[in-house]
Amino acid sequence: MNEKVLLITGASSGIGRATALKAAKEGYKLALLARRENKLNEIVQEVGEGVGWKVCGHLSWHGRH
Image (cartoon, rainbow, N blue to C red; front, side, top):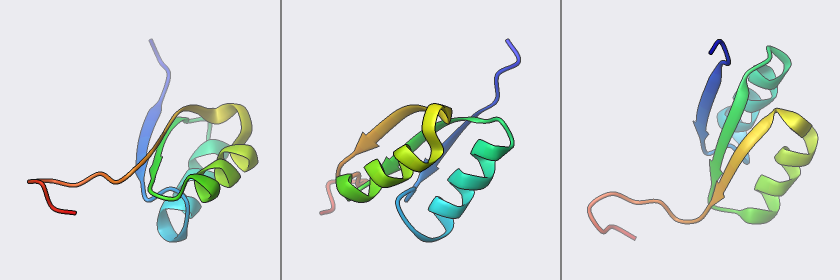
């Protein structure tokens, strides 16, 4: 099992998006998390088959909103 997997939070913009694009080019299988579904779908389309999983929603710790 030599597959490289990378979990990226905030994947729809900024550093998270840049990391996703670079990691995809380097052959990583990506798990992308973001709050904005439309932006997440854009990066998924751009990365293509490198995305193994995508999660959209508000993720918070200790019940914070």
